[in-house]
Amino acid sequence: MPTDRLVLRRPDDWHVHLRDGAMLKAVLPFTAHQFGRAIIMPNLKPPVTRTADAVAYRERILAALPEGHAFTPLMTAYLTDGTDADDLAQGFEDGVFAAAKLYPANATTNSAHGVTDLGKIAPVLERMAEIGMPLLIHGEVTDAHVDIFDREAVFLERTLGPLLERYAALRVVLEHATTAEAVAFVREHAASGRVGATITAHHLLINRSHLFAGGIRPHLYCLPIAKRETHRVALVEAATSGEGPFFLGTDTAPHTVTAKESACGCAGCFTAANAMELYAEAFDEAGALDKLEAFASLNGPRFYGLPVNEDKVVLERTPSTTPDIVLTADGEAVLPFRSGETTRWTFAGAA
Ligand code: DOR
Ligand code: ZN
Image 1 (cartoon, helix red, strand yellow):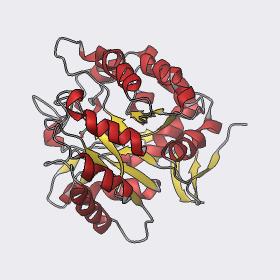
Image 2 (cartoon, protein in one colour):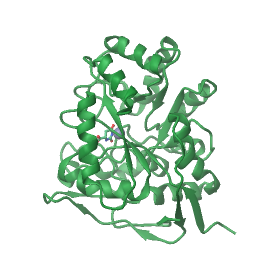
Image 3 (cartoon, helix red, strand yellow):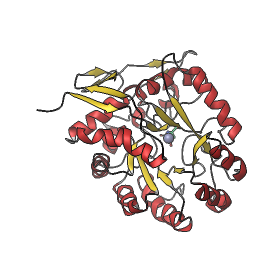
């Protein structure tokens, strides 16, 4: 008999874009409804670079939180060539920053202020290694000569491998892993306990052909871009293995419909509205529902050295319909991933 009802410790989302202002207010309730904690990405305009920025942003998030949600935002610092190592370390030691995010300059949305050369932040990386502050990495090279589908694999070889050798104590998370090479890389370093990887729901469910099914599908475009089917299969195998280094990070990244449906559309899939339903579907298809709790609720806290959530949530095998559209107070629209479609699972709230 297949399981029709799953009770899990409340999951956390280790990679979320909440944005700010009216967008924050519109999207936060979805993440706060399903997850206990979330790692909040700092790529605002301007980015969250200093401890004081993160304190202020955290207050705006908490102020936007609907009544009755015990949700904890875990803040991150956006690294730039000019990051002040003392401010960063102080922010981590004071419990403001949970981690720092490395965007190679111009790799993705709002990354223009990112790091142009890792040599420029050598003192920052040394300090992070010393104090045990995790480095969260957008793992793609920005070299335009490298094919967009190869940018992650090339990054592992050119950048991440040497980085791990150089900073022997640095803890890193390869965010939104999308390739079989990434899965193998993380496993090669598993014994060290200092390399983790988040995997999104959309990368478990779509491959690059879905981006062009019947026409171009701007709402499926994200970075790193979805790869071919063999890679999706490798990601499903990793996520459903239960192995410690692999944990849940949706990379939910809302953009307005206008920004997505454009001659030069923004990268990002908005998956917060049905995140656990999507993961449940992917795990169900792999016959691995028994591994969902490790991936969604146990492996992340272990990597970050945090306690697991005490409360539990229920997922039921009943179809749920994803909202067609989410509106912000200033009249902008955001389309959820699988907008208006049915998913075979329902997030039924607290147990
Ligand atoms: O698809 C993406 N969207 N990938 C990223 O790395 C950034 C994100 C965003 O902020 O929109
Ligand atoms: Zn992201």
